[in-house]
Length: 231
Image 1: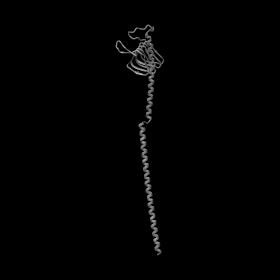
Image 2 (image 1 turned 180 degrees about the vertical axis):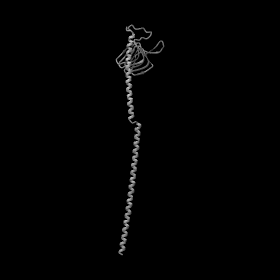
Image 3 (image 1 turned 135 degrees about the vertical axis):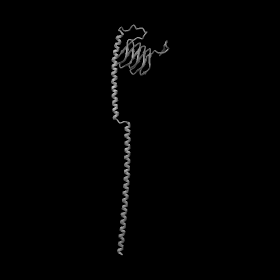
Image 4 (image 1 turned 60 degrees about the horizontal axis):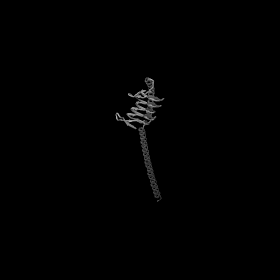
């Protein structure tokens, strides 16, 4: 639901905005309330809300709201400035940026129910909270980088020790070539053995025939001699 600004004639959202996923925009503006779920994430240059912001997920960008800002557990905000009427930070939330609380839009009347405490004290307390949360974020990022570096180092060692697909293919090709050469050699040896055996067999047969012929000729010669002697 939206309406038109009477001054600049631009469209103005007046309904609440619910963010359940990642939304990258330049400006996120509404007169209603912006609610970001645990899985929701907003990445914008400027975020403006008339009724306030409730964040359970992550916000990136400058926040400007006439209402209150509630940061739930494990929520995250990073930007240049966060300006709101009040700020509630749950345990575990992380904020990185400059916080101004309480903040009122220039030209708007200060509400009668404004807190009696001076804004300077509130601002310093918020700044200390932001500094602590910023330190936590830095430590978390450093730990994440160390874990990533360890994974990269392990992967590098694994790549060095584990044979690659190309080397495996080359090894398989060499093994196939060796097997083919061995098969060819075996076939050649078998063929040579067959030829040698055939030659030996033929030589034996030829020698046997010659021996038999000699024996026959000798018998015939002996028989002729006997006949001649009898006569």
